[in-house]
Length: 328
Image 1 (cartoon, rainbow, N blue to C red):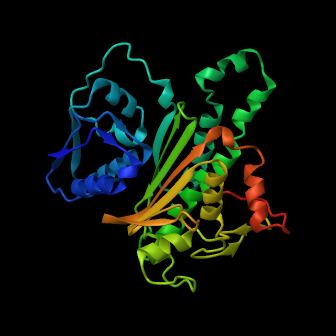
Image 2: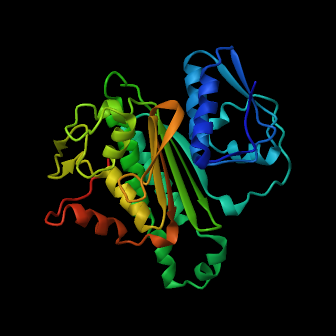
């Protein structure tokens, strides 16, 4: 039986990948997970669990999560990617209230670009529409400044769409045509923090960028860092609406938006985990065991995003062009 820890945090990424690997290394018909101690799981943990459970199903196995506390179960059963794996008898406590300091929380699996667009639209709209409890007075008083809370919608749509595009398009190189992505997003009222994680089971950065002229060394560390440099892409083409598709700016803009929003971004692929890639704060950490595919984690402070945030960043890289930002 695989035991889940009390907290599953992004800062413990190697441990989270280790749990996912242990699940996949178990070839019993039913893979049992003991969740008696589990209190909270951040978005990246939810994605890794969902991805590993889905791969078990593809192999004809099943996952059994045992011992979940009722309040944790109620929270996780709302997520499409995890609901199917609660196979033990349901223990629903009456009148359990949701903790609005951790709302909204959403997660899903994405297999196609059309699904990616739908997810980006739905998720960005829902989070933008969520008004923290301490701001209800502004809503009641029809405070015009409330529109600032909707300013996150367009930048968030861009971030989600670009990350999913990277996973589903660039991740399908070298025989990984069936690559899928798992995304989870959570808004934390305390700290006004928006946390987004995307996990895919694609080819990974190194294989995707193996032939790129700017790849310094054939290593996972170099590939992860290179992926965040501007105008770096595994392929480029021209869109039918006179825009440039796959310009190699998606991850760069996501990183810059994080920094502008007083946040943080990190990415992992293979055996490398790079925090704050291509910035003065860049740090490379080993990821053991490694991950087949790409993991991206982002933190943004919601109120730091303005309606001009995305346009300001795009102008840095395309100052003389007026190309529309086609997101998918």
